[in-house]
Image (cartoon, rainbow, N blue to C red; front, side, top):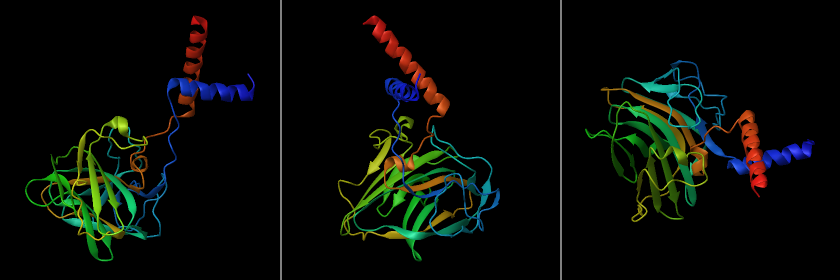
Length: 270
């Protein structure tokens, strides 16, 4: 078979098999916590597809331990961040993201059996938002500014947390929070409409000034329990923050072969 014929067969086979190449994701921030196990501060995550503008490193407490948290087919790399005491670590972004007329997506994996622990976004020294397990005794996943309480009780199980924040030209902030979305929705072009979905689109916070954050903080502010973080991503689409591994060359060849066989069978039947 000629090279052109082979490539045509590969494309036809993949199409017949139902596989479509995902759109190339453009991630603004990504930390897989792939630094060596030990204290989290002092070393910036690098490699493994990590993206972090500027040379800022984590500054504060917490440790990195071996192994990634996982959620379905979500693409993971490196290790995980752990907090077993009251501690926090901040890291400068090296740029600023957000503000008026923006559409920003955030995602991370979290496993915690304590309240008052999560990820905060800062502008200078001002905390603009808190994502994770809120304060109080309820121990539920949620969001501050605007306040969204999902009612999903935290535990040592891993949860996939995705937040979308759309801001207008003035003070409108529409937040949509996805907790443990269907695994079939990961990596596709549009966000799911099923699963644990919470939003304030009916009554967005019209008094909130759109913010552009420049610092991220991991925090655990309750000594009772453990909290683990992993795979922190910021992007401009659902697909950016919910990537899955792309099929390998061998898998594509298998798909192509299957597609060609199916095509031949249809021709014989015809």
